[in-house]
Amino acid sequence: MNPPKKFQKDTVHSALDVDGDGVITDAELQQVEAFEKAEKMEAQKRMAWVAMITMIFFTAAVFLPIFPDARIAALADLFSLFYIGMASCVGAYMGATAYMSKNR
Ligand SMILES: [Ca+2]
Image (tube, rainbow, N blue to C red; front, side, top):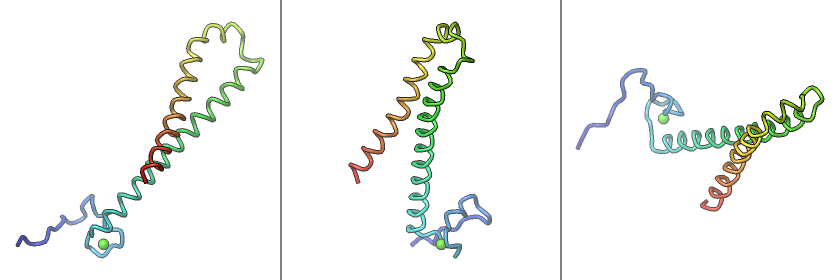
């Protein structure tokens, strides 16, 4: 039988030893994986919120009198792309969340 594997001193993987006892167990690896998954989901949620808030603020800003009509007309094509991009970010988040909760 092979001897147990050892990590070098101060390895970059020492964060995987959650309880700090010097042994990286399968349970600890699963725990770290779950943490990373939760972190990723949190980042995606934040992205969706930022996209939604940006759309709202942008729409409000365009209606302010400081925004000249000529500029709105010139940027009309860009505006629709902006809304499609932001809305698809929100939609993708909602779709991914619904898909993940279905497969649980
Ligand atoms: Ca440990």
